[in-house]
Length: 239
Image 1 (cartoon, rainbow, N blue to C red):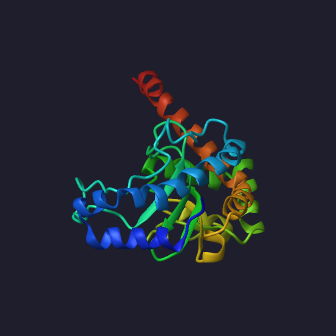
Image 2 (image 1 turned 120 degrees about the horizontal axis):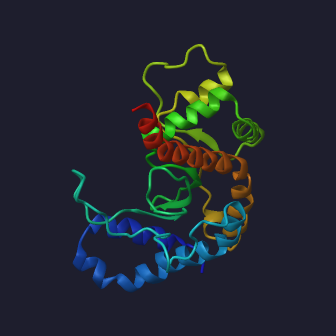
């Protein structure tokens, strides 16, 4: 079943009440209006995700591909129990690792939704490796940069340095080098699409545009891992 206005209303009202008792009283609505559409969408997008990367985890029963509506409040000042957004994420390896990119879809109670690929919080080591590949103008980066500029669906996002760190780099490289984190995101507010059976097909078409961009992020992950494995040997040799 597709999302509906009732799906959004539930997310809003549940967050407004922010009560375990209220949620348990309305859990059937959550299962029907929110979790079921997410599960169906996750399954429908699985084949295109495996086109992009056969090693991605796409089965909710195997990995944490669908978010929990209950928030983890252990490490945040905001102690609200429930979120007003839900998402699907596809990753390989450790689901929330900082060294491997992921692909995602996210829906909010106000009706807007987003999707794309990248990191929620990339590690410093990962970003250092990425910048090295950008500065070296590797084939993977040139292919990704060309793909980024050839489409108008996804934007290059990420927190930027407050002061330029690479003022002398070419403009095309600075777009990448000045980022502290990285993702490629599309943000939309289109209830006609969100509430329709066309959503999975439209998303699949757009996700295929990400192939060179996701491929570059994955190449950086492979390189960063190789560097991490190599360092102890290098230190031993120098000793």
